[in-house]
Image 1 (cartoon, rainbow, N blue to C red):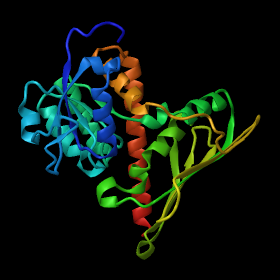
Image 2: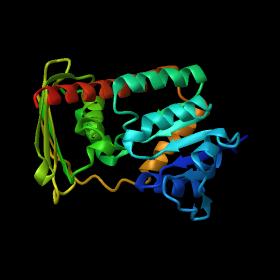
Image 3: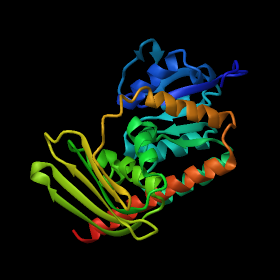
Length: 296
């Protein structure tokens, strides 16, 4: 991306919440990857007119415009599948915030559609671009895991909009899979007190070497967003995360990866490995949901 772009890809941003607003900011600023992208407008269900001189356009115009070649889908998770399908069918490349869909079957189907259309389908995973993950990756490499746990706490999310907790929390699952390889599900339970907006999902997983990993998502009003981890290895332990610095421009880093894909700068092997990991995490999330729902 150090060369001057021969052409610019016209982009529309769908959804202008936190992620969509950051995407618009990055597209408008003079970054290396932004030079390959031309922000045409944004799509929103709200009537906003324009944001920072970027015009609002209708979904129909975004789908039919020959100027628009790329869609950044930043809407709530429950709408992702429909938007991805519409934009791929209209012949557009797609970047979508995680989770791509709320089912493994739908994600597999959409990936097949993207391949049929010859378009890039990219699922954002900014959690893998964080300083904390880079630190963890270095810490666990070459070590023999005995057992581990990851607890995440936060305020509640609406399941209708963001999906079952295994999907809305898929970035934590992605961390575990990226650190320790493909996992199998041992058990999963969901404790809920709807009158208090309280939820606790406890998932027991196993590595290919049968090492146990526990993943807990706990949500309630007033709970601070926090991540606690504990990994025990034959050679020592890692308890909680040291302060490893501020995460800067992680959405921009993700945009850089997407542009490299548009320019054909990723190998088939790299793309296949990423697709395998994403589909594995979505499959696991679906299995966790099934386990939890069968016990309620």
